[in-house]
Amino acid sequence: MLERIAELDTQLLIYLNNLGSDTWDHFWLTYTEMPTHIPLMLLVGFLLFKTLGKKKIFLTLLFIGVMVTLTDQFTNLAKHTFQRPRPCRVPELEGAIRAIAKYCGRFGYFSGHSSNSMALAVFMGLFLKPKYPKFFIFLIIWAFGMGYSRVYIGVHYPGDLLTGYSVGTLIALLFHVLFNKVATKLKLTDA
Image (cartoon, rainbow, N blue to C red):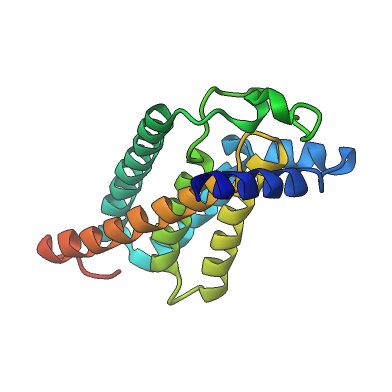
């Protein structure tokens, strides 16, 4: 059963990765780099401030920092526990995929880009959704794009992304519940 899942994962990787072309390589190589998204995160920070007010923004930023650190470290723990080689390190895939990444780490299960971006999108999006519902959808699409960029450049399997998206979502939901409990206990009122 697990062998069949791994085989399907590899086939889907080859298919999705080979949809790429020289025309789009620069876009996805740029998209996958975290500093590219600083302007978006600044905009989200501004919208969070407008939505939550000055009493909650510090706590929100603190929670975001802790959540991203936890998500990232959990991802690294999983990578070193499972030790699944990245596609760009699998000799059998050489020539079958377009491995265009500038760097190819050793292990890939599961994707930190997917887990971190989805955790951010869900956590921040839940605060913004009542006031900016379309922006919440945009953040989810942004997170899916971050994951896809990893398949495009040849450093992750689609299964790595699905696990990352799931873990990121669960952590974000947990942190959102915890945030609401702490904000209530501290009697932080809306702006």
